[in-house]
Length: 306
Image (cartoon, rainbow, N blue to C red; front, side, top):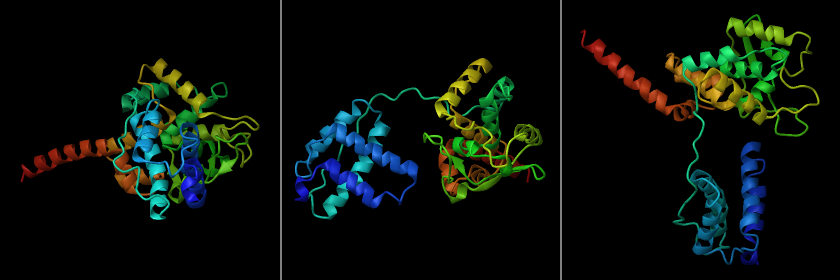
């Protein structure tokens, strides 16, 4: 009976059984997207007919319109479900074994972060007033390293002007039509972030006239889109004559500049709300290695004076 089950149905049931409620909403959406792709690519493929050849053809078709990393992610999610089918005896052999991962030519991606000089030029172009509502949001992310949804979730009640710090306790569900507050990415994302005095004064001005529970950057009844804010950031980057980065690139810029300034990995991880230091180390490995090389030079210079 199970062997005649459609692959798409088995995968969807597997996601509902093992992933819903066990992974974050963002990760679950990726699994559900894979389910939709399976329905598009192999709507009639049964578990009985799922041979290595059939699976490879499935991957090859997907690879025609996706980059290799995207195909690899797709493969890993489908493979996990199929391996369970093998363990349960529904399929005798694993058809995903030795699968060849292909993909389209990698597109040129935006730089991940700016240098201090480039960021300074970018900030000079920002006009954080009521006529430029997204500029203040971009300024805040650049100076705090907040995630986009975290910045949207801020209210006046989250800012302590006396101690010059803000509390990240929630996010804004900007991907939903109805919006609304949502939990942070993980428990470690709940944190306090210190503010410089200038940003603190600007935020104080921004909070005037707002209720304590009112979002700083979301207009009631109006959606805010990541793409719209990215478009404004692109405009600012071109005006400043610096490489075009994304909103998330401002977060990377913030972390990178702190590391170059000599701030410890542990402190940067805490400020970014990473679950552990290994996440920070993996994301910024190239910078850490560069700094380690400089440290080794300092060690040698010091030892030569003894």
